[in-house]
Each structure stands twice: as C-alpha cells, then as structure tokens.
Image 1: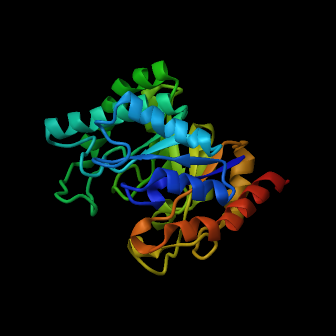
Image 2: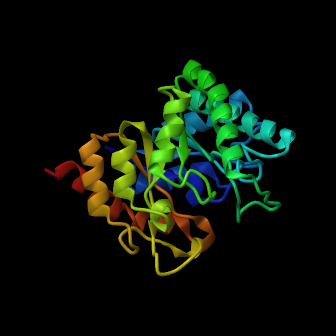
Amino acid sequence: MKTGVSLFSFTTDADLKNVFGKIKAAGYDGAEPVLSENGYLNPNSTVAQIKEIKNLADDFGLEIPSVGVWALWENNLISNDAKTAKRAMDIVKKQIEAAHLLGADTILIVPGYVGCDFASEPERVRYDIAYDRCRSALEILAPEAEKANVNIGIENVWNRFLLSPLEMKRLIKEVGSPNVGVYFDVGNIMYIGYPGDWIEILDTDIKKIHLSDYRTSQSGLGAFVDLFAGDVDFKEVAQSLNKIGYDDYVILEMLPNYRQFPEVSIVSNKTAVDKIVELASSVE
C-alpha cells in the first residue's frame, strides 16, 4: 500500500514545485493534482502544460496516482441546465485526458448533487431524476475512460445524493464498466454512516481511498480534523481494507480552508497515515 497527498489540501494556485518538494520531504509516495477553473490544472491546460506537471513530479520522485476536481461543484454533472451539465461532462473528459498524460489510473469526480451548500448558485434537483442523469452521464463517460485506461472514481461527498453503499453499488453495476467505481473518503461518510460498512460492501469497486477524519459532535466543514483526532474508527477502516484485499494508494486530504499552513498538516499527519497502513497490513 502506498501513501499520497491530495492537493485538495492546498490552494488551487499552489506552487507545484514547492508543494511537491514538501510532499516528497514528508515521505509520501505520490501526489494528487486537482483540476479547478483557473488553477495550475484547469479545463484550458494544454498537453504541454499537463506534461510539465508530470515531469515536475518525476523530478521529485513522486507518482501521480489520481486527479481530483474542484470545478464540479460550480458545474453540476446532473444539472437542470443543459449547458451546465455539458460543461461538467467536458470537465470530466478533461480529467480523463489529464490523468492519461500524468500516468494516473484514477480520476475523482463529484457525481452531481441534489442540493449543495458549496456552490455559489446552488440548484435543487429531484433525487430520482438526479440518479437517472448520473447513470446516463457515466454510461457516456465510461467508454472514454476505458479507452484512456483510466478509472472514474465517484467520491462520496456532501451532495445529498447516493446516500447508501447499496445505492452506490447498484449505480456502478447498472453502468456496467470495470472502469467506473468509487473514490471512497472515510471521513466524508461519518455524517451518514460507518466507513467499514461502506468499504466492505463496495469491495473491489473501490478505486482509491481518501484519508480524512471528522468529529461528529461538531458540524460543517470545520469538524474535519487531523487523523485520529476525530471519530473515524481507523482500526475498523484498516480491518475492512485488509478484508477486501485493498492494496492501492491511501491519500491524505486536509482541507486548506481551516489550516493556515497546510504543509504542516501533511507532515504532522504522516505518522497517522503510516499507522493506518501498518494496521491494514498486519490485521489477521
């Protein structure tokens, strides 16, 4: 099992040379760039610019296992507005292209939202309509992902949608592509369930893991805390990962909004990340 840091932990205009250097110095194996509207990786990034990110990671001896996304909150994949939905589809296609060029095997997507507290102008989409639109979008995107040898990982996010591991698994089965699965965040799930349940039910449909922690006695984004400081049962997480035979990346995500110096968080949490890997490797 390898360890990485998501650049969700940094701002969208982060200096990649500086960030990659700090990630490498902290002892991680990889870094996850994130596509945003105007950042270092965006819908208008050229092939040369994307390859430059790959070359920079190579210079630091870092792998790029996956590509995240900010831009799908402002562009709802299952929007009532056809132009917005198309824009979202184009963003995912750009992620697939970027992942292929970067040597990443997975992209993280927000599968759309029924309701949202993060978008500047959130809309309301009826749940059953949202489900049908999401399935249709994934059915269109899956062949492109397959052609690029890239996995689409649906992240469990605060979108009032796909609120059960059974529903998530059903969606993946209906899409029917080996390249469509789940990018599972163990902290995000705490407001509606238990990460161990989700991991064991989703099983081999899990493409990547985000490590975060959440304090359930609080509320909102401010309840995300350092690993082992919240209510995620990481021993149970490790046992479940071991049970399903997961041996891919576990990637730290520390939201930058509440940390003045995110580079400190990636260092201070490395011991916790290593402990989780140790637990997942030693469970009998």
